Length: 165
Image (cartoon, rainbow, N blue to C red; front, top):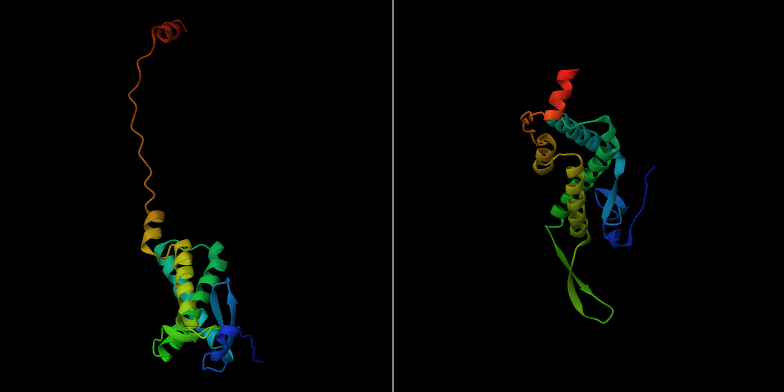
């Protein structure tokens, strides 16, 4: 059974080789639903790579599975958009004629979705400690070493009390 969900701004990609349209994801990025389960194998391979990288860095925990699944889904979407972007000849802008009849240049829907996904991927890679900046912060928690305090001299009262007991 083939699913068909198509956002109006992606109707031009409705019958492409990658999907049957799109839907919205996090109000910014755009989802592509794949024909024939192509995304399933790709996602499981991506997830395996992400988990392996996290284990290698020593930051993997089972608690992160849901976050990893979201991150892997976004990676798969980004790869699909890269392919479509390449097939479009790396077209960044389109001509658009508005209601008043003026023709303007605007970003293509694929390029806009890729920009949003880049931001989301950076955020999730920060959460999962998969980039150098966050990894260094997690792996090197510089805890200040306390200076050894010199033993304070005892007061005459304490000395007198300790001698009598």
